[in-house]
Amino acid sequence: MPSRRHQLLAWAVPRLRKSRDLDTEPTERARVERWHAGLDRSRLPTVAVPRFERRFAVVTETLTGPGGDFPSYVVTPRGVQPTRTVVWMHGGGFMAPIDPFHLRYVTRLARALGARVVLPDYPLAPEHTWADSHDALVSLVGRYAAEGPVVLGGDSAGGGLALAVAVALRDRGGAQPTHLLLHSPWVDLTTSTPETPDFSARDPWLFLGKLHAYAAWWAGSSSPADLGRPEVSPGLAPLDGLPVALMTCGTRDTLVPGCRLLARRAAASTWDLTYVEEPDLLHVYALLPGVPEARRAWRQTLDFLR
Image (tube, rainbow, N blue to C red; front, top):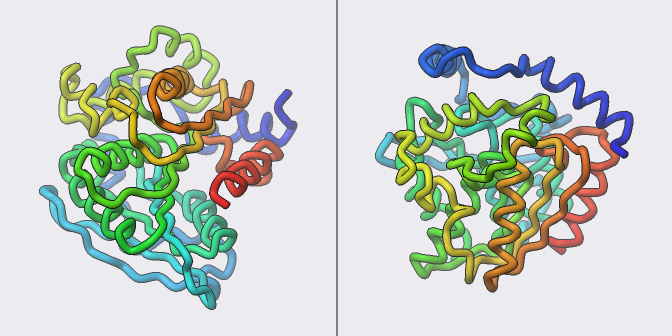
């Protein structure tokens, strides 16, 4: 049974984030575009990391894609000589920017692993699609992988993006990450699994109407051919030859059918994927602050990466 802390967050987080399904796609598009116009994306959101400037150094790289330039932040614990790199693709339905709790999680990883963290601030939908950043992200991860060990990870949409980058690196024959870390990844934007509506009915955070809209924005259309391509739905791509991976997911999550599909397909391939499914836990529970279940996922993650 989930902890009381988890149950409290399951009630509070959707309300704090004002989670609700969309009214219409055009209304949602206009809302998100207005939100984006008012965002300050000139620096990292450090509010959830105490004494961030004293504890971490930040260097900003500029990446270039068809949609223009975008930043990638290299965060290194002060006083640490990094032994490897963590490249983290942040979640947010491909339409939300880096969140303070993304930064909190990856800086904890950096300290625990003696690693630098690379956080690409990739262009967001609906103004942009996967094509505006994909090649730049593949080149970024390949460059770091050629220099030393790389953990490639992500949460939610970022987990799917991390897997898509890993698939592209494998197919292009370059240096690959040593590990993949996927927390509640969105790996099938076709939403083809028939049990998805039943899981969505129990999910207080994610809504199918929004997921369908965000998927179409990221793919560039709602065409099955675009939604199902490996850059968009990497869970449907061939999986042989990918780096060893850990995936976590809770069953109070609209995305769990896609995670189960990925686990089944991995079992039928040569890919070494460990899948941890926790009953009645929220989307991206592994990143939730102060939750016993997240502490358990943290220990599993460190055991896997060490």
